Amino acid sequence: MTRTTPNRRRIRFTVTGDVQGVGFRAFTQDRARGLGLAGWVRNTWDGKVEGEAEGPIPAVSELIVLLGRGPISCHVESAVTREIPSLGEDGHFRITR
Image (cartoon, rainbow, N blue to C red):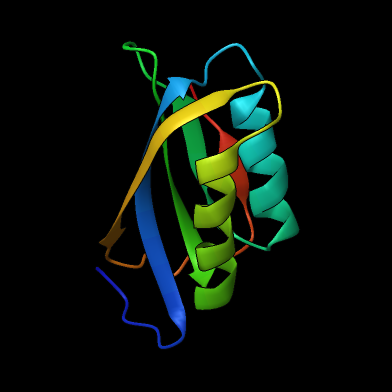
């Protein structure tokens, strides 16, 4: 069941470029946790990083900006996000495989 929660958003993101083996997942997890977001991040078989994040609109918007930059050791070619239905999750952001 999908919850509609005002002032919150959930996104699905895919980041391409030199984003694997450079600490991108740990960077994303650290920033998402610092922003109080819930969700997950993982590497894909084709060299991308993907994930979902949910929380207050300003915090998710800030994460989107950070995904476009990444850690200093990476090169982001693109960071594509799309809105998806909220799951009503709070405060747990993890790296998955």
